[in-house]
Length: 269
Image (cartoon, rainbow, N blue to C red; front, side):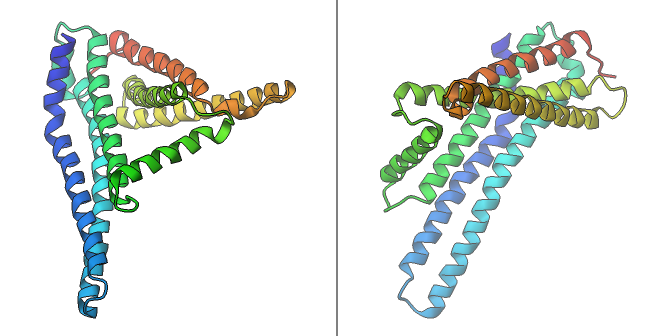
């Protein structure tokens, strides 16, 4: 049943997200052409240089708008899709099906997660391709990885290992998953309100966010004090391990909240 729900979710989302992501690719290529055209126009007539410069500026603006529309718009669409299909008018039909609540949550979570990961990968690839150095994509990609390595080593003086890179990527993905489940939990908690369910969901989201920041601040302060007491570097606070552990804890908490409301407190009136 999980596979059928995921298949249905793909059909409901790809018609908007695939064209949006495809347009990002097109706008990236057009912007690269505009930049190259401006470089080639150097030394030509002054009027040609002006027109090529205006074309480049226009394409860069279009590129920025396309990126924001595709990424932010896609994210908003997925949130709206979850809200309407689970707790909106479509939810009446969904919850009458002989389907386990876990399958409902997982189908929407997995599909949305894959779409967001694809969007982030497209964003990074587009930026690397657009701002490539020395006209060599391979060189640019290598320099990008070196920059990421410096970020990883910001709080770690030891040599970066392949294991650390893999675990950092996993930690980032788990953190992304926890953020998605936080949205699902906030929307679910908002349904407990008799009126203004959407506003309640937004309120719950910010309340959860504030609580998370308080917990994180207390954790950093406590761990920093402990690390200083044992003469150790406090940079461990920012390591992949703490990000992974906290992400897993939040994933479990937010998932259980979503499931509990959907299973025990569901009210679509």
